Image 1 (cartoon, rainbow, N blue to C red):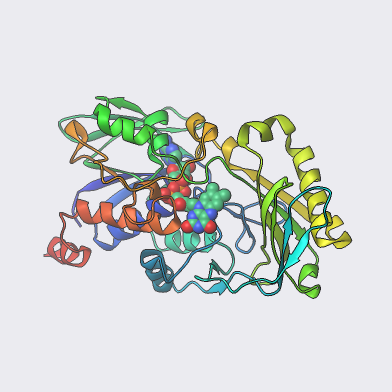
Image 2 (cartoon, rainbow, N blue to C red; image 1 turned 90 degrees about the horizontal axis):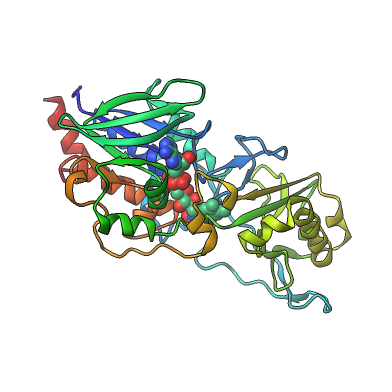
Length: 375
Ligand SMILES: Cc1cc2nc3c(=O)[nH]c(=O)nc-3n(C[C@H](O)[C@H](O)[C@H](O)COP(=O)(O)OP(=O)(O)OC[C@H]3O[C@@H](n4cnc5c(N)ncnc54)[C@H](O)[C@@H]3O)c2cc1C
């Protein structure tokens, strides 16, 4: 085993995939995750809202295997079962509050959106289970990075404990660049050009909110409805069937009201409005959800910055350098937003973290690097 030590900041999909690749190459690492749970924007919960092994995806739910080889290969390698997003039946369209929602024939999805059985957190759970005990630190925020002759002096803060400082030879930042620019103190400061790039890169879906209504059964299917609906009235703009592979019935919708306005409306009014809308669109059976869930990512300080809340952009691959100057060689960016092929998406998290670890291993393939290290 080499003595090279890597700090990974962030325990979302990108951080855990980086950890998987380092572990496979025999390189020791410590992963620091500020939240008390792993997964980052991947969050699967039960109807009480607690993280669960089989439940509802408050963060990402879909992937597209034909278009997303990096993620598809990972899902296949981990042996995770997937199933197609339910879309059999008619869709609904609500144009004004005065008119009845229109019923339109549904169309087969192309490409087909897929979901992981149990929820998207299945990939997080499976990745974490293959990593060494003691290498995954939750409730551990990285607050400062200082460049020294020996490597990077990383300050880690855990609630109720004195900050700890550890020197690592390499840091892999597996988090949105905007957070990296705003939540960490730098010594020395990163070069202005990359810092501008970090600040200017929107964190995908950070300003959004997802609402779920959980039911005893998927009653809309009996009426020949797919659960897919669009509305220009709101509060939900786009609605889909969120029934789990195990049969727990639910509808979910993306809230169509901007983050600042959501805050002034308040959760209770928003939830009441969403249920009223489901009754309008799907009929009286929608009036009695077993539970409702609302996750507003704009309120989540480990996802959204003030810049994300103010605008709603999609990150794009610019080809610009993420790191220059003193930090080059000591720091790698690996979060989804830094992907060159699919920035912002789950596939991007796998692609960007794979690219970062391959760069760290000196452009050799991980397999070759692994063999060389064992000689
Ligand atoms: C509502 C919603 C719906 C989405 N739907 C889809 C979808 O259907 N399909 C799709 O492909 N993508 C979707 N996405 C995007 C997808 O979730 C992300 O691309 C992916 O999860 C990003 O993974 P990541 O590891 O790069 O970043 P993150 O998941 O954001 O992980 C970064 C981690 O870093 C941690 N962190 C931050 N600061 C620190 C610090 N200082 N110290 C330690 N840890 C820190 C955070 O707590 C977090 O856990 C959706 C996102 C949201 C919010």
